Image 1 (cartoon, one colour):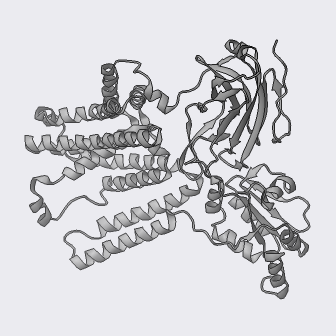
Image 2 (cartoon, rainbow, N blue to C red):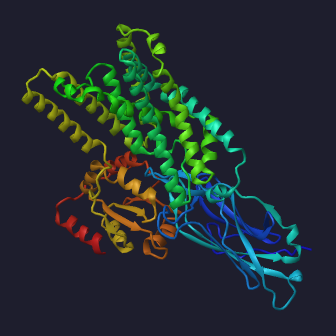
Length: 604
C-alpha cells in the first residue's frame, strides 16, 4: 500500500505545498494571471525508472533552457535528484520553445506544461535488499521564471518524495518532447527519396506564396525584358536569377550546420521575420522598391560605364532579385514545406543539407525552364503602357506590405520607423528627381550628397534605440527615501535587475525619454535605482516586504501626503508616468532647501 507523504518545500509565493501519494508539489512562480507549479513523483520513461518533475502553468510564464541565453549565467532551469540509496543520471529535458523577449532576441525556454525526467542509474541498498526498499528522494529545482512583462526573483525549491523500488513497474509512465539532439539521432521516418520529393514540391510551392507576390511583378518584367535579348543572354540571366535563390538556401543550410554542430539547436522556419532589425530593413527595402515602381528614380548606369561592362550588365541585379524572392517566400510556407524542412533538420548534416538545397532547386526550376525556352518568352505580352500602370499599381501593394511589416514591430519602434520611412522617401525623391546624368557633375554630387546626409541624419535620430544617461539615478537607500518624503520631495523608485531583460526595455522606451527626464528634474523628484540582482540586497527585501511586489520591472512613485504609492508594472507606462509627473507641484529648483534635500537624497 502506498504511503502518504507530504512534500517539504522552501518558502514560495503562498508558503504552502500540496502533496499527494509519493509526490510533492509547490508553486514556483505567480504574477497576475500567469503561474507555474511543479510536482515531483516516481515515474518511468520507456524502460527507464526515475523521478519526474511535472511542470504545469500558463504559456507566458517560462524558464530558460540555456545558460548562454538566460538573463544571467547559471540561471537556466535545473532539476537535480539526490538519495542515499539511489544514483541518478543527467536529467532529460524536453525540447525547448523559442521565445521572443522584449528586446527582440530569440531565446530557448520551457513554458506551460512540460516534464523533466531524472533517470535512476543504479540502486545501492546497504541495509535492505533493493526489492523491499522504500527510499526518500530529495529533488532540487532552481532557476528564474519570467513572463513577457516581468522577471521574478531567482528561486531554489527543494521537494521530497518517496520511491518504492519494489513497485517501480507501476510508476507513472511519461513521455517527453524529444530534444533536437535526440531527433537527429532517430532513424528517418520515411525514405529519403520521398523526403527529397516533398522538398522539391515545397520549393515549387514557394512560387505561389502570398509573401513572394510583391517581387513577382519585378520578376515578370525582368523576364519580359530578357525576351528581347539573345537566347544566350536570356538563359544566362535566368540562371543567374536562380543562383540568387540557391544562395539563400545555401545560407540556410550553412546556418543549420552551425547551429546543430555548435549549439545543439535547429533553425526555425521564418524566424528571421521575428527580428525587429530584419523587419525594419525589409520594410525600408520595400518602400524604396515602391518608389522605384512609381518612377521616382531609375536603376541605370552612365553610358561610359555600361560600354565597359558589356554583357555582364544586370547579372548582380538578377542574383539580388532571386535572393529577395527567396527571403520573402519563407514565412508563408504551406504545411508540406514545414514538414520537409523539419525532416531535414532532424537528419545528419549531409541529407539535411541536401534536402534544404532541394527546396531551393524546387523554387528555381520554373524560372530556369521559362528562360531556357525562347518560344515561351516570345509569347509574353510586349512592353507598353500596361507595364507602367502595372508597375505603379504594384508600388502601392509594396507600400501596404511595408506597413504590414512595420506593424509587427514592438510598439516603441513603430512610430520612429514610419517617420524615417517618410524621410527616406524624400531623400530617394531628391536623388532620382532633382538631378540626372545630364546635370553638371558638381551639382549632382551636391544634391545627392545632401540626400545621403539627410537620410543618415534621420537614421541616427529615428532608428537606434534611445540613449541612456538622462536621469541621475541614486542607489537605493531606505533612509534616503524616508528623508526625501519628510522633506516633501517626491521619490521615483525604479526596481530592476541585471538578469531582467524587460528592465532593459523599460530603460530604453521609458527612462530614455527626454520629456520624462526633464520633468523629473523640474519637479525635483528623487530618482532611485533599486537593484534587485542579489537575493539579499536591501532593494530586493524592500521590493518583497515593503512594496509587496513579486518581481521586476516595477516603478513606484511616492508622493508626499499620499497614502498609497503609484505603481507601474511591465513595460509600456511612459505616457502615464509623464502625466503623473506633470501633476506634481513645481520643485524648489535652485533654492538652498532644494540643495539640502538633494544632499539628503544622495546620502541619507
